[in-house]
Length: 361
Image (cartoon, rainbow, N blue to C red; front, side, top):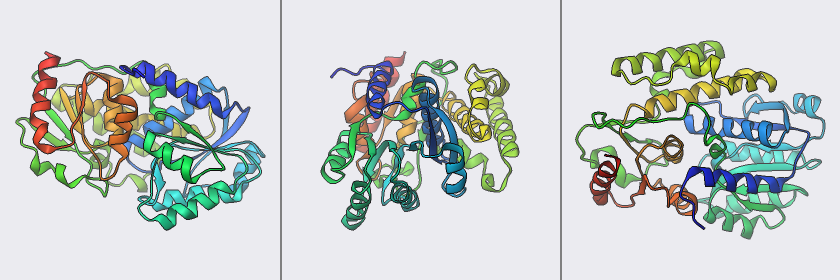
């Protein structure tokens, strides 16, 4: 299969998701109540697909910590439950898997759809436990986000409907406001995660490139007390701080005011349950776009750093994470994107950076 552009990946995403069927209404659970831009991008892709393409009304949303079974049932009755996608189906991030297993165990009276996930279990016992719960549900659909995860799911979740699908963020391909203007005077970003998914051979000290800025998502740095603030204050501070950062570097290409108040997608949020959570995700998307537009090339070990660069058309190097997630997603979907290179060995990084920079001239 030739997949040389994001538009093709979006087509594949739609064909995959169509297999789940259509529903009049639903709940969408596992809102990302944290500062990781990538998970907010996934959330936005999910709500835009369900609302705009599937024509499904999202009548209840919740994060793990504020989920209420009684509130959900009041809002949707026995309508289907969608569980948001990502890279947390497994035992690396156990709190998300525990919530997923709780929902699947409790709500066997309706369809449950797990949106595209990467699967990784370090402990076979945890995989066996998850399989028992998943296979006990009479109507569970699981979208696997790469070929490796798909094969694991087929083998262990044999009573479920398993579908191979790209990430939900590809729903936003061709969305207004996604643009990039190359400038040879801009620095290079090493967009480096520092958590337990970091591949040790690619620590920032091992990368010796001139004019290199090393940072994770800007939201981690700028919103240190994020969880303690009301939503309105969070949004205001995020917009102000990103605007200040970009004003200092003279690289602001999308104003906060235009993005947050006048973008053609903004009106969609008021038609959804609890609009403020979707508006918060929208603010995080803005911060990620603004961050990446400041650089002529991005080196990233985050999957959604790679996906956001792909949507924006930014030349970038994609690095492995601590397990198969990044490598398998690239090999399944994006290996033919011309302005991306997947680099497995740190010794090959400099040559690939030079090659991409030469091609961008």
